[in-house]
Length: 369
Image (tube, rainbow, N blue to C red; front, side, top):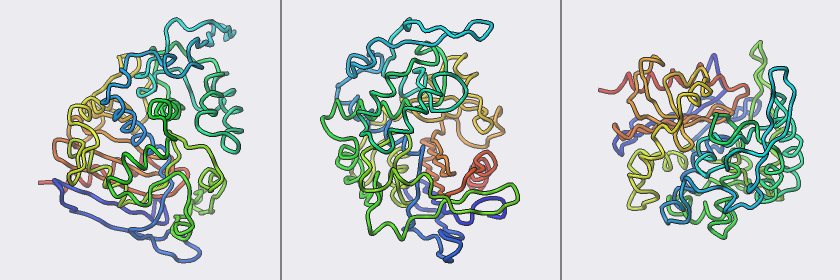
């Protein structure tokens, strides 16, 4: 904590037994409110793993195949266009040479990006999504995303973006339910995840962990700029970043994955589907794109990192370990071979993920006999 957040929590479960569970520091520094097991966190991109599991549940029902064109289910994606750049940076707009396949959404190989300044796709996506958080529901927001030309030909590169938000719209179309309702009925309620949702209930407000911006000199400043999406009147249910949860709730979800898709008699996925999720799906070119510092030695499966080469990352974990992380520093690790799950929570921007997460992993594996 001297080099990280003002408070954090971690739960480690091995072969069905909680072997480590600790809360440290403060949920609110000014009020001296300590973090506890009921503290609520913004889990940001750890939402993606939930979204991908939900979509795979529909895959298991035979409602789509991974190689199906996305436009067969979401018509707005039937004729995607792509920006091309020549050697001088001159941009042209051309029809995509191939459709976006549903697996491209899982794999982040669709050409859909996040908002940003890196290229024209990012700039247009940012403009669309600045409006979405205030006025659009999930389906409408995805139609806005579909109107933006792709950053590259579908299936050719890897680029982190809003693909899993589009997957949430696909779940709505296939299930006939609102995305949040589907998650509640099929995952949260069966697993007893009572504090996991897109919108803040009144009884959760006093339990929400304060988000802190950390300045270069270590000064912590509360940040509420990103909290509009959790209010009761927000219609957007982001499959990429929208959920609130507690460490206890998310640890139940983690145990399902470490236990082959089942927990306490409730089966969410089959072991074979979990195995497919946790298999690297990237080509050699796409693996070169997946070059984040903390992902050395990892590939990428259906919405999760997957450990391929422990030596490349100086990693003492098991080949096949998988998981993901959230923007404010939350962390998920699943090791099917060891039936191990690690869930770590904090609320810090920037998150210091490349420093903190590999150390958590190293310490947990170092403690195993």
